[in-house]
Length: 159
Figure 1 (cartoon, one colour):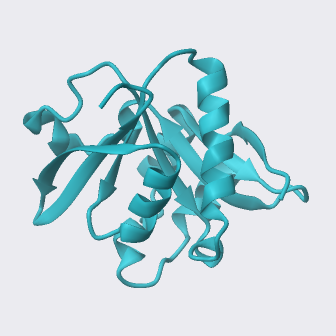
Figure 2 (cartoon, rainbow, N blue to C red):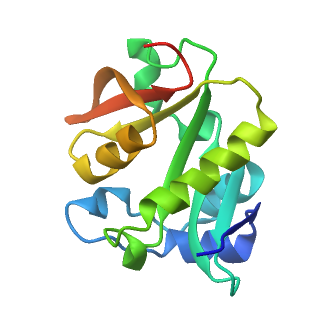
Protein backbone atom coordinates (compact mmCIF):
# COMPACT_ATOMS: atom_id res chain seq x y z
CA UNK A 1 0.00 0.00 0.00
CA UNK A 2 1.46 3.36 -1.06
CA UNK A 3 0.80 5.97 1.60
CA UNK A 4 1.32 9.71 1.64
CA UNK A 5 1.24 12.25 4.45
CA UNK A 6 -0.36 15.69 4.32
CA UNK A 7 -1.24 18.43 6.79
CA UNK A 8 -4.66 18.06 8.39
CA UNK A 9 -7.54 19.94 6.74
CA UNK A 10 -11.01 20.77 8.05
CA UNK A 11 -12.55 18.21 5.68
CA UNK A 12 -10.39 15.40 7.06
CA UNK A 13 -10.85 16.60 10.65
CA UNK A 14 -14.63 16.32 10.34
CA UNK A 15 -14.33 12.83 8.83
CA UNK A 16 -12.00 11.66 11.61
CA UNK A 17 -14.18 13.09 14.37
CA UNK A 18 -17.11 11.05 13.01
CA UNK A 19 -15.27 7.71 13.12
CA UNK A 20 -16.80 5.12 15.44
CA UNK A 21 -14.77 2.24 16.86
CA UNK A 22 -16.21 -1.02 18.22
CA UNK A 23 -15.87 -1.84 21.93
CA UNK A 24 -13.47 -1.77 23.70
CA UNK A 25 -11.82 0.63 21.24
CA UNK A 26 -14.81 3.00 21.43
CA UNK A 27 -12.69 4.68 24.11
CA UNK A 28 -11.01 6.37 21.11
CA UNK A 29 -14.25 7.79 19.67
CA UNK A 30 -14.41 11.56 19.39
CA UNK A 31 -17.23 14.08 19.48
CA UNK A 32 -17.65 16.40 16.50
CA UNK A 33 -17.45 19.95 17.87
CA UNK A 34 -15.98 23.18 16.59
CA UNK A 35 -13.33 22.98 19.35
CA UNK A 36 -12.36 19.45 18.26
CA UNK A 37 -12.04 20.57 14.63
CA UNK A 38 -9.94 23.54 15.75
CA UNK A 39 -7.64 21.20 17.73
CA UNK A 40 -6.96 19.07 14.66
CA UNK A 41 -6.44 21.88 12.15
CA UNK A 42 -4.40 24.28 14.28
CA UNK A 43 -1.98 21.85 15.95
CA UNK A 44 0.55 19.41 14.51
CA UNK A 45 -1.92 16.91 13.03
CA UNK A 46 -1.36 15.11 9.74
CA UNK A 47 -3.42 12.74 7.62
CA UNK A 48 -2.24 9.51 6.03
CA UNK A 49 -3.75 8.87 2.59
CA UNK A 50 -3.65 5.85 0.30
CA UNK A 51 -2.74 5.94 -3.40
CA UNK A 52 -6.33 7.04 -4.21
CA UNK A 53 -6.17 9.94 -1.71
CA UNK A 54 -8.56 8.12 0.60
CA UNK A 55 -8.08 8.71 4.32
CA UNK A 56 -6.39 5.77 6.07
CA UNK A 57 -5.56 7.45 9.36
CA UNK A 58 -3.95 10.40 11.06
CA UNK A 59 -1.30 11.28 13.61
CA UNK A 60 -0.25 14.16 15.79
CA UNK A 61 3.09 15.27 17.13
CA UNK A 62 3.86 17.13 20.33
CA UNK A 63 1.70 18.03 23.30
CA UNK A 64 -1.48 16.94 21.49
CA UNK A 65 -0.15 13.37 21.62
CA UNK A 66 0.16 13.43 25.41
CA UNK A 67 -2.49 12.38 27.93
CA UNK A 68 -2.65 15.48 30.17
CA UNK A 69 -2.90 13.45 33.40
CA UNK A 70 0.52 11.97 32.64
CA UNK A 71 2.19 15.29 33.42
CA UNK A 72 1.52 14.96 37.17
CA UNK A 73 3.16 11.51 37.11
CA UNK A 74 6.27 12.81 35.32
CA UNK A 75 5.47 10.82 32.18
CA UNK A 76 6.59 13.62 29.89
CA UNK A 77 9.54 15.16 31.72
CA UNK A 78 12.08 14.03 29.09
CA UNK A 79 12.32 16.06 25.91
CA UNK A 80 11.10 13.36 23.51
CA UNK A 81 9.00 13.66 20.38
CA UNK A 82 5.49 12.58 21.32
CA UNK A 83 3.32 10.92 18.68
CA UNK A 84 -0.30 9.83 18.71
CA UNK A 85 -1.94 7.85 15.92
CA UNK A 86 -5.38 6.85 14.78
CA UNK A 87 -6.35 4.48 12.00
CA UNK A 88 -9.72 4.48 10.25
CA UNK A 89 -11.89 1.92 12.10
CA UNK A 90 -12.47 -0.36 9.10
CA UNK A 91 -8.71 -0.78 8.66
CA UNK A 92 -7.90 -1.72 12.26
CA UNK A 93 -7.11 -5.31 13.13
CA UNK A 94 -6.40 -6.20 9.49
CA UNK A 95 -2.59 -6.36 9.61
CA UNK A 96 -2.09 -2.88 8.14
CA UNK A 97 -0.85 -1.19 11.31
CA UNK A 98 2.81 -2.02 10.87
CA UNK A 99 3.11 -0.42 7.43
CA UNK A 100 0.90 2.51 8.49
CA UNK A 101 2.89 3.33 11.63
CA UNK A 102 6.28 2.63 10.01
CA UNK A 103 5.53 5.34 7.41
CA UNK A 104 4.57 7.77 10.18
CA UNK A 105 7.78 7.03 12.06
CA UNK A 106 9.82 7.51 8.89
CA UNK A 107 8.18 10.92 8.37
CA UNK A 108 8.86 12.00 11.97
CA UNK A 109 12.45 10.73 11.96
CA UNK A 110 13.20 12.52 8.68
CA UNK A 111 12.21 15.81 10.31
CA UNK A 112 13.79 15.15 13.72
CA UNK A 113 17.22 13.60 13.43
CA UNK A 114 18.33 11.65 16.51
CA UNK A 115 15.19 12.39 18.51
CA UNK A 116 13.68 9.71 20.72
CA UNK A 117 10.00 9.12 20.00
CA UNK A 118 7.46 8.53 22.77
CA UNK A 119 3.84 7.46 22.61
CA UNK A 120 1.12 6.90 25.18
CA UNK A 121 -1.38 4.06 24.89
CA UNK A 122 -4.18 2.67 27.04
CA UNK A 123 -2.96 -0.57 28.61
CA UNK A 124 -6.04 -2.52 27.47
CA UNK A 125 -4.99 -1.91 23.85
CA UNK A 126 -2.76 -4.96 23.59
CA UNK A 127 -3.09 -5.00 19.81
CA UNK A 128 -1.44 -1.56 19.59
CA UNK A 129 1.16 -2.36 22.25
CA UNK A 130 2.24 -5.45 20.30
CA UNK A 131 2.60 -3.33 17.16
CA UNK A 132 4.65 -0.70 18.98
CA UNK A 133 6.97 -3.34 20.46
CA UNK A 134 7.38 -4.89 17.01
CA UNK A 135 8.54 -1.47 15.77
CA UNK A 136 11.13 -1.10 18.53
CA UNK A 137 9.27 0.73 21.30
CA UNK A 138 9.89 -0.24 24.92
CA UNK A 139 7.57 0.30 27.88
CA UNK A 140 8.66 3.09 30.20
CA UNK A 141 5.99 3.91 32.78
CA UNK A 142 2.32 3.46 33.64
CA UNK A 143 -0.10 6.04 35.02
CA UNK A 144 -3.84 6.34 35.60
CA UNK A 145 -6.45 8.77 34.33
CA UNK A 146 -10.13 8.39 35.23
CA UNK A 147 -9.76 4.71 36.19
CA UNK A 148 -7.95 3.97 32.91
CA UNK A 149 -4.31 2.89 32.92
CA UNK A 150 -1.92 4.26 30.31
CA UNK A 151 1.62 3.32 29.42
CA UNK A 152 4.32 5.40 27.80
CA UNK A 153 6.60 3.67 25.33
CA UNK A 154 9.83 5.04 23.83
CA UNK A 155 11.95 4.27 20.79
CA UNK A 156 15.36 5.68 19.99
CA UNK A 157 17.03 5.67 23.42
CA UNK A 158 18.88 3.12 25.48
CA UNK A 159 16.40 1.43 27.81
